Figure (spheres, rainbow, N blue to C red):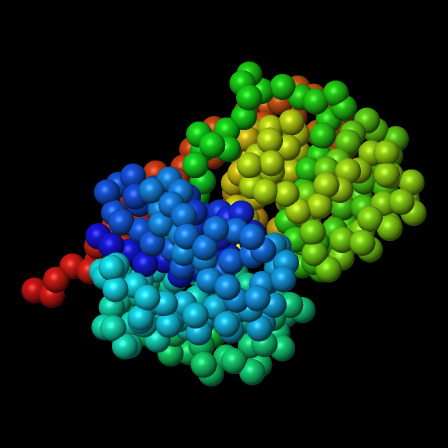
Amino acid sequence: MKILVLIHEFPPIGGGGGLIARDLAAGLVRSGHQVRVLTSNFEDMAEKETVDGVEIVRLNVGRKEAFRADFKSMLLFVVKAGLNGLFASGDFKPDLIHAHFAVPAGAAAFVLSVLKRIPYALTVHLGDIPGASPEKTGAWFKRIYPLTVPVWRMAAKIIAVSRFSRSLALRSYRVPIDVIPNGIDRAESGPRLPLKIGDPVQIVFAGRFVPQKNLDQILRTLSGLRGLQWRCVLIGNGAEYEEIRAKVNEEYLADRIELPGWVEPAQVVEIFRNSDILFLPSRTEGLPIVGIQAMAAGLALVLSNAGGNPEIVSIGENGYIADPEDTDGFKRALSELIQDREKLLAFKQKSLKLSAAYDIANVVEAYEKSFAEITRPAQ
């Protein structure tokens, strides 16, 4: 099968959605499919290259930051992906279009599907669903929501990455939606064995520095645990980066909290391998790929109860959850794990075991079945 993948941010730029798109594409190639990805270029990246058998075509859309796409660059991606699919891909005649994110890639898939009569599947993550991140996309959806309805209705298959994402999407769109959880290449993200605990215990966060991720809660919680032995690495960048850096200094925690900024995915994996606990107090989440990466690296999880987070936590076995604003709850969870190294090691081992359910091979198989349903000739 020839599959044309549309996604506006693909590693090494972007966040978790791009990581699952990358690993899924590579997995489909290993299964014998031919995959071409249309995505956004950034700075001096190669306009065309093949990685793990996946052909990647990067379009110049004026993207200004590696970790974030603005509305203008996403709009330009729709235009250029559509034009490329129509006029510049004569050597690649796809059987199926696979769009990651209803906005913006879904719009390009819709146009190509109508004009070239090719079915498309749509994978929705979270930020492309109305109501998921009102502080981030609420104003956009007020203007563009009517334009998104045909994108959802015309899709041959819609796949959500978590039960939470599906339930949220159904509030706005009356369409059938399947669930295939995010997955990762466990061999690539796996830990150093045997699992060990750092001295001191290392806590890690990875994600965009935006209100949705609730980094203020991380600082409030850790400030209340300064009497315990720990270190913390906050990986990422975004609108709140300088504000968070300033607060770290104000709280006199600069010697214990490291802020390396945005780093490439391989570096995230390396930091995870040297960490013990993922702390993710997000206000909203789909199914956090960073959480699955952390499990595969053998980390205990301390997450908020937002969105799909509870779907990857076995409470009291590999982690704990608390309300995003429950500072005391997060303090209790982290304090227990920092001080009880035997329990922390057991949690890390359980995470590693549970991560098997999210192996990319299982995800690829599920997508292959969905794609076969779309492309199967009519009887």
